[in-house]
Structure formats: C-alpha cells, structure tokens
Length: 173
Image 1 (cartoon, helix red, strand yellow):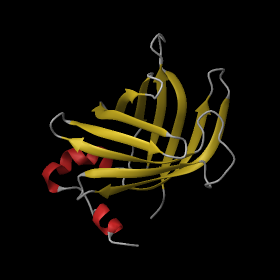
Image 2 (tube, rainbow, N blue to C red; image 1 turned 120 degrees about the vertical axis):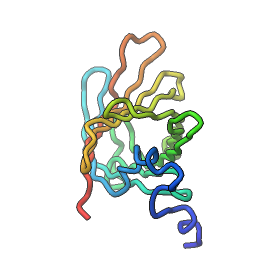
Image 3 (cartoon, rainbow, N blue to C red; image 1 turned 135 degrees about the horizontal axis):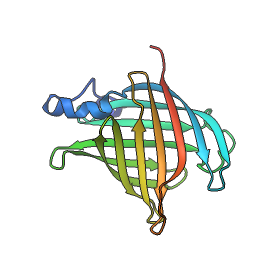
Image 4 (cartoon, rainbow, N blue to C red; image 1 turned 90 degrees about the vertical axis):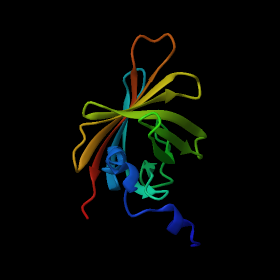
C-alpha cells in the first residue's frame, strides 16, 4: 500500500480539542454487532455485522466502517439493505458539534448530519435523500457496548419511526 494509510490514520486525538474529540473517540476499536431492521408493518429481520472505528486526519476526526450483514456478499438484508460504508466524524469548534458524513456507495446512500451529546447519549440529526428527517442515536454507551438507533420522520408524521437498531459489543483485544 502507498503512504495513503500512513497519512490518513492517527495514533490518537489531536491535543487541541482532545476532550471534545472523546465524544466519538471512545468508540475507537473493533466491534461485533447484532442488527434488527424494523418494517412499518412490525416485521423484523436480524443479522450480524461488524463496525471498526479509528482516529484519522491528524487525530482531528474519527472514521468508521460499518459492514452489515457479515460476511460481505451475504444475501440482501430485508428493510435496511446491506451496508458497507464509512462515516467521517469531524469536530467543529465553531458550532461545538460534530459534522458527520455517511457514505455507502454500494447502496448510493449519502447522509450529512450534525452530532451532539444529549445527556448520556449522542444524537445525530439530518435529512434523508427523500427529505425526511433522520436521527441516529448512540445510547446505553459503556466502555464495551453501545446501542445505536436509526430513525426517520416524514414531514407529516407525528412520531419518529425506528428503522434499524444495532447492539454493539467491543471485541476483546
């Protein structure tokens, strides 16, 4: 491999905003995931996956790769589809929040969100390609686990609809 990986990856958070960078920095490492997709009619589908987080861009950002279901190339996962994408999470001190970009080129899904701590949770908000509101939340965060919720809300919908939930466990070192 060229020097690309060497210049992309970082050993830890940049000292300038080290405290703020820990909002997502605490996830750096490798995770196994149990995924449940929720259809509007109440049907659910389950699969396993994996998530990998790392420091990038001189420690000024956290990047992750989500692979759902595992193994890659598995049959299509109903409702949510198969994910093989990456998120770039960059802390922006001018708004005291995170600018987040998710890219899944295999499904042509591209999202931008703003992420902030909300109590013990992390909530990311943006819109879908169809213009619906999107909310992705990290909840029940511990050193070795988290619960991630992917929700959407149409313009005329009274409530958020849960589409995907992910229960992640840190892999043993």
